[in-house]
Image (cartoon, rainbow over all chains, first blue to last red; front, side, top):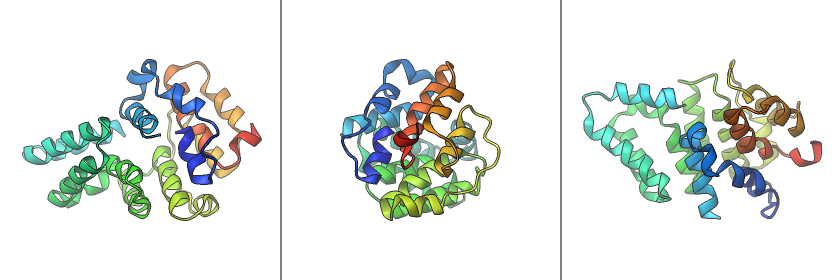
Amino acid sequence: MFGLYLEATGDREGGRTQIEIAAEDRYARVGGYMHDVARVHMQRK
Amino acid sequence: MARLLIALLMVMTGEQGARAILDRAMEDFRAGRIEQSLAGFDRVATMSPADAPYLWQRGIAQYYAGRFRECRDMFISHRTVNPDDVENAVWHFLCVARAETPDAARKQLLPVGPDARVPMREVYQLFQGRMTTAQVMKAAGTDPSAQFFARLYVRLVPGGDRRS
């Protein structure tokens, strides 16, 4: 969701790193549906 | 939020149609079919109005569909059944930030109760402007779940990078 705030504040280029990491497969189990949200977010960029 | 979803599904026992639509809406979202997903969530809300406040996934689908005022209202509604949830307040913030401005979102930040999940308390304080990103990441420690949610939410706060 790094990108969510940045989009909201107009900085579309900054800070993709954290959401990219959150969307990694290793967080699928602990993240559940929110991991799906992170993954969908990255797919829509 | 996952526990509330289970509760919602239990409430819907006997309404297999609504449950099937809900499952499909979630699957559509996972597949990136946002409009189809939202249509499903909307249909569930119409079929079972009493359960509509539990549909936090609907608010996220509304966000990705660009329906920011609708998602703002969805998360206000969800708070009535899940008043302690920091994630709900964060998503409400995001919706208001897109519908209005980040400053307006901070002013309208929803109150929350005790959310025991680490590092949700710190995430909320970050959105309040009372904590730095570095402090939130430190609070997350090495627990994978805490790390996930810190990475998910920590950078969403206005000026987060500058204050870390």
